[in-house]
Picture (cartoon, rainbow, N blue to C red):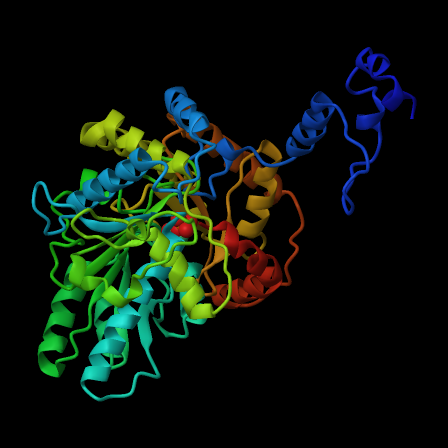
Length: 503
Ligand SMILES: *Cc1c(COP(=O)(O)O)cnc(C)c1O
């Protein structure tokens, strides 16, 4: 009471000794009174100290460091609403340039001076919804013109797909037909995938950089096998490539690897700008091979911002103004208002900054460095003699590893114990039919160094040593497989909660 009536007195208190910081924080009801800005800052700042350190979070592919110059540009744009394309035409232009550059990097058949078809999103998850929807609509058109039913669309993927595909399937009522994995083989087998394809398949989704092991799927073989099947059946089933993590790896490290629009059946590709596109969280991209691959009726006119309608037209000669249509599409599909956060202007600007600043040379350098650090870490982990390495040298720079012997202790305990040093490594079980295999994964990002790799290995060794001296939390079983299954059951509850963190 006193403080509120006599603000000058309040100013002489130390922030921590002031009543604002001494009182419990409000959690349910908006406080009656205002408090000084420095007290508000301190309260929130201090609570956030208890979050993990993003730089030591090796669970995530998402960028945790950018150059200060770029931070400055992003801060300057933080008050621009990207949706207002009319008011911020330059930001829109930067988005279009990014789409063009990405389409070009992925060998889309567009001319030198031609605009590509694509859009910036909040991440690959949103990009995948959009791409999946385009496939669904194209398939429906085709079926209708053939006088066939359109009620049972399906999509074929590996069981290793990221959770956003499951979301797409559920939200947009498409059956997800998954190719099962097996021990020692953790990506989609193209042969089995093509076997699963039927007349209701809207597309086969291949992953460039499996989230679980970083391994690239064999899109070229998939394209060959599917071409053959299409010739026999006339179904014309297309391919989508989920290159969320690998889209900014493969072009720089393996330029001869054919996984993109060089393969005729690949009609759309998504990539996360906030993974190896090297931008902070909140930007992804989807590009289509050409405008025929994006059905016209997915795009229509609205004027909820009160500006000229033509702004909202999908205009291919100008390109890339799809985002608004996406919103209207949601209105249309759900007959209700769904609020979608469109990637902010800052993220789009940051993406353009990275393309301009780094160029092909810069990206190649950074990715090569990530690969070198991955190898240092992998070697160190192998040298402990206690782990099998599941990730491959060709793929996304990450190390996925499982314990050779988990009869006494598990990767989950290792993950738990590494938290003590600040390291965040996810431990998870593989999808069907390899769910008895439990792994740890460390994603290598630009800001991870040789020195940190060595420290992590030392900490893993220390944790192993300590664990060896502790009694087992598990019941003993006979075989390795039974033991692993026991592990799986034991940790299932935790893992179910943790899956969301593996992205
Ligand atoms: C990360 C990831 C996604 C989801 O991407 P966001 O950009 O986080 O939305 C989808 N697929 C794969 C293969 C991924 O690695």
